[in-house]
Structure formats: C-alpha cells, structure tokens
Length: 249
Image (cartoon, rainbow, N blue to C red; front, side, top):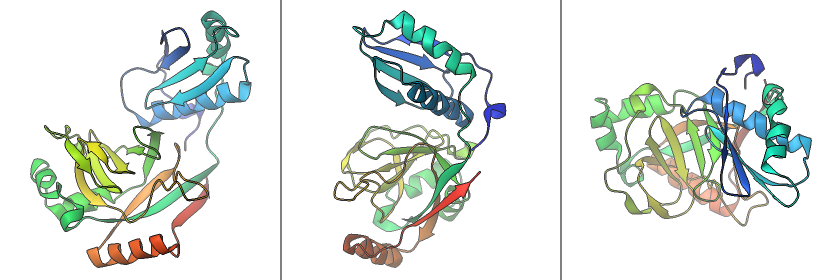
C-alpha cells in the first residue's frame, strides 16, 4: 500500500462547502498516491474523534468533512486538521486483494469494438491490458457499492461516451479516463462497457452488502460466456467461492 515516504509533497487547500462542511483538497490530479494521502487523512481525523464531526467523505483527491457548526467552528476544525495532515498514519499492513471474473464477450461487452478501435488495439489486446495488473479501489460513490478503480495504462485515457446510456445493466465493467468502474445496479451511465462480472459488488441481502472498500485491490480475470453463466448461477445459489486474499504489505 505504500508508506508516508511515498506521499506527494502537494499542500492541500481548505475549501468551505457551505456552513456545515469543509473540503481538504489535494490538487486536481487523479493519482494513486494522492488518493492514498486522502484516505490516510480520513483515518487520522476519524482516530482523533473530534467533537462535532458528523461524517467523512473521502474522494479521489479530497476529503469532505461534515460537521455541526453549533459544536465546532470551521476555524477550530481547520486548526485541528492541519497538524494531522503532516502526521497521517501509514495505511500499509493488512489489505484485501480480490480476483474478479469478467466476461469480455458478446452482449457483456457492447462497447468493446469501439474501445478497441479507439485505442488502435485488438479486443484481445484490450482484455490483456485490462487484466494485466492489480487495480486499487480509489473511492466509492455514485451508486451503492460502486467502486472507482485505477489507474489503467495511459492508453486507456478515453473520454466518456458522447451520449450516455439510459440503462446500464448491473455488474457491467466500464472504462474511461484511465479508470474502471463496476455498475452495481441498473442505472444511467456514460462510461464504455467492455465486460460484465457475475459477481455482485452490491447485494442488500448479503451480510456485508458492499463487497469492496477504498484501499482494496482488484485483479480482473477473463472468463468465457459459458463460465460467466455458470459462475452467475453459483452466485445466485450462494455456492460460489469468491477469491479474496488477505495480504500483509
């Protein structure tokens, strides 16, 4: 996961967000180290247990702190957070690495041909690059259990689709801007769909409804349409053994 020695030197900015929230922003670049810095600050603020803080919302490059202005003033909050920025905890240690099957064929990958052409690659080359490395979960958002993962190789720096879809099937794997997302429920969406996983990243009936969390890593593994269907049947039946490795870094 990296250590404090790996952190970027960028100084964050404090940005008021109305009367009840403060944003600590680390620049405008999507970068794994900056994202890690945000998560470290969130962990430090949470551990500090400052009275008046209601919620912490880490994003790609910023941390939004919701607070009760009747308990905590914005100036006092900034004074409390400032020393934590330089003394954030190391998040290395126990982590989870997920292996997620993905079908990159047929109806599961409606945008594969368009993406391959845009990248001047064959569909198989797109699959090979997409499954080549562990991707870190930067943040959760947009939909319940919806993860943003990255960074993909620079060649995947694609803009979103010119016209978003009205309905994206659940469990769709998408790419844009060197990131990958998984649509957890049917919803509108403007990212390029290159695959679908039989695994539910969000299941309200599961003991832990949300599968992954920020800081986890995911390695995608290509499976055939036949294997996808078999795994999906096992998932629905509750008999699929999902591969998750607990690692120490």
